[in-house]
Amino acid sequence: QVQVVESGGGSVQPGGSLRLSCAASGSRFTINTMGWYRQAPGKEQELLARISSSGSSTDYVDSVKGRFTISRGNAKNTVYLQMNSLKPEDTAVYYCNVQIELSNGVLYEYWGQGTQVTVSS
Image (cartoon, rainbow, N blue to C red; front, side, top):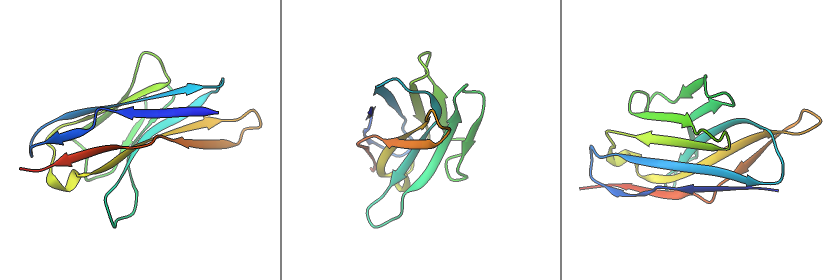
């Protein structure tokens, strides 16, 4: 079993910044990719950013491109999301997603409990 824990959420004013952290731990595993998702009340979950195991390849949804930066830690079981120029519409619960590759080649995903980000005046 793999445990995924996010931290770093909070309340900020528009234009402010937050840095989210995510760490995966537990049984021995090999991480394929890690990513960040968010979900606002009454809305569908959306993928924000994803990063490869090496940290060399990243993808972003258009709405956060240029404002958010995803990165891997020195320990490759960690991932960060630096959020700058935050807008009220960024308010949501943010989730860390960890994709691992099983011995048979099947991919499996684990999710964190979520961390609240609130952007308001």
